[in-house]
Amino acid sequence: MDDYFLKYENRQPEPPLPYSATRELLWQFLAVVALVVGSWYIWWRWTGSLNTEAMWFAIPLVVAETCAFLGMVLFVFNLWKDDPIVIIAPPATLGDITPDHPEAGRPISLDVMFATYNEDPELVRLGIRDAKNISYPHEIDIRIHVLDDGRRDEMRQVSDEEGANYIARTTNEGFKAGNLRHAMEQTSGDLLIICDADTRPFPSILENTLGYFKDPKMAWVQTPQWFYDLPDGETLDAMMTRQFGPWGGSTARAIQKIVGPVQMGTDPFVSDPKMFYDIIQRRRNWANASFCCGAGSIHRREAVMEAALRSFGRKVETRTHATEEVITVSSKERDIAPDLMDAIRTEAATTEVLTPYKFHVSEDIYTSIVMHSDRERGWKSKMHPIVESKMLSPQDLLTWTVQRYKYAGGSLDILVNDNPLFRRGLTFAQRMMYATTFYSYLAPIWNVIFLIAPIVYLFTGVSPVSAYSAEFFWHLIPFLVTLELAMMAGTWGVSGFAAKSSYLSFFPLGLKAIWSVIKGQQISFKVTPKVRQSGNFLALVRPQIAIVALTVLAGVWSLAALALGPTSHSATGVVSNLLWGFNNCLAMLGIIGAALWLPETDEGNEKP
Image 1: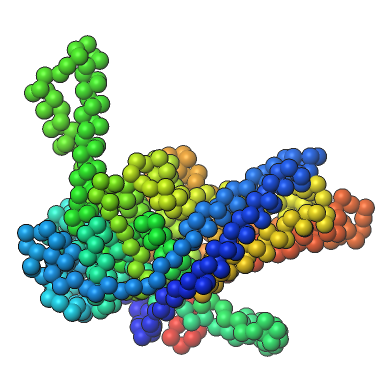
Image 2: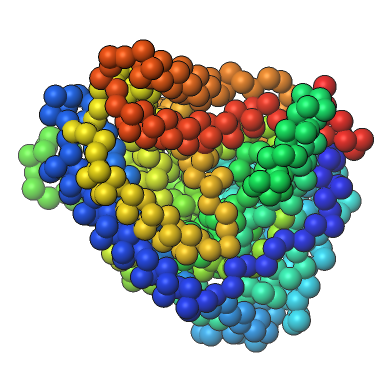
């Protein structure tokens, strides 16, 4: 086992962002201002700024701006409201979470499930040991299970040595979702915790979360995923000295005197999920739209099984009606004999598969949609704000790519094949929250236009706007300023630049996922590697390198054109697009640096 993470064992997660009613009001005010100013800007772009002599350029850019603005509207809706952090006292008996249960007086039973396939058994051992240390103020029946889809003797041995129940199956149908379904058939806990092979639960995970289940309609609670192995990084001057010698270190120290300390490589792949869990997911609680993210989530068995049975019943009924229609059309009979109808229903029931967790590469969010749309039961979800477990982060760009492609492709597959916007049972707020998630994965389509646009102008001098005039900046700058102020207030406490840069540089992978779904390709269930992959990963970022190279060349070309003249370039146009292109290059440099990043050994030297 690659145990590089052992030196980080004593790390503790940051506390959740505190709730502030004053800051929330400031955010809402600034967000409204930004939306009003943004609407004014977009209207003007369509009605008063297009370069009619270059509509081939002007239209794609204004469409991209409009799409980005719609994404902003959804994001504002997502972040609109937060709730104070309240930890509910943990339940003492089953009756506290299921009042009408015939065994209401007995202790709660809970299954901790570690889903594994090809990960190192010794890594899973660490999670089992941490699960054995889970504390609870009342009597509780905790059972630990290892769900091994790899059917490995070594994994069985680790389970036996640690006192965990080993569960394996003969096939890998449904992958992780199928693995969980099979395990639920072998277990009976009232609640269950889903863990990945590298999940390390904290002792407080149950004491801090089970109180939510006092609401009988609470179906699941998601806790933040926290990567405790993010590298320490190094100061800019140390990095520059190592790469370029003493003169590089001197230059870096001079830069830091101006801008302050700069730490490099602390999170090369922008893996820190604080923005997602502490801002995006947490702000969905008010709409009952926080979705399950798999590892670190606690589920009510009754809710999962009931939702599965309802879905199963609907599918059986649909299949039965389809068969009935075929028979009546072919036989020209209006009615079918009762015995034949019973046989048709039986055949439909045996053909369909009962799936507590949807057989899908994004089984967690898919199952969330199914349960949120069960209006009859009104199931609820909760994003618990406090970190209750730790996990390992991607340690190379290949692993990061596998993970992000799976997220993007799985979400887009749901959007195309089972769009939640048209699913019965979801509230308007829930539809908008899910729309925000899926819409964000379409962003590479317009982001690529934002990346290419300054290059086109700097090379050709052809402008997408009628003129880079005072009127143009009078509309653009207020929008950019109000938007930035609003986002600063809305995400206060979490740095946004790295996340925005990663979002922009994601475009090749996002376009690949979009194209795969359009072509109807099945998104792979490939397991995200839990060990460092070796090799040169620059091939994975060739599109981003091309953007940087083309922007630099275009910048040089435009400056030369201005100097030598005459040219169709304008000074304000060149300066504006150089700044735009520079921002794009900064975003691309993050992921290019991630491709070159090498972890350090214990001695502090790079791996060869």
